[in-house]
Length: 100
Image (tube, rainbow, N blue to C red; front, side, top):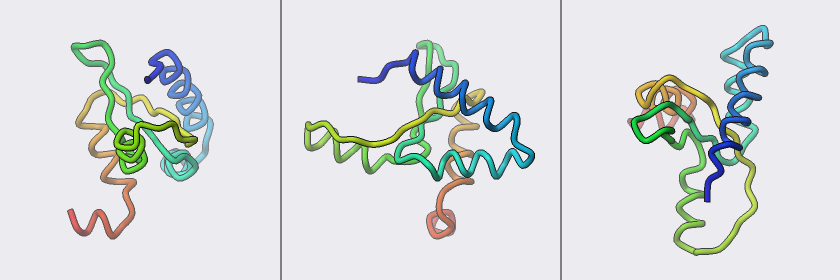
């Protein structure tokens, strides 16, 4: 079960990290590389929208096996779903971007 309060706090921490970085793009790439699962959060009609930036395979495996697994995770706040999808595309490994 996702804890939306925790996701907001994680996204706030990421925002501070990126804001103080000299190279903001590199800081964002470093955050995404450092975690197993990265979720984009954004405002939606339901309150908070979610989009998996990284780690979808891990989440699928957990859901299919109905077991608990240990994985690192964080969240990144974005303005909307479109920004989340672009962030996922831009931070995907090169071979995945070429295939898309």
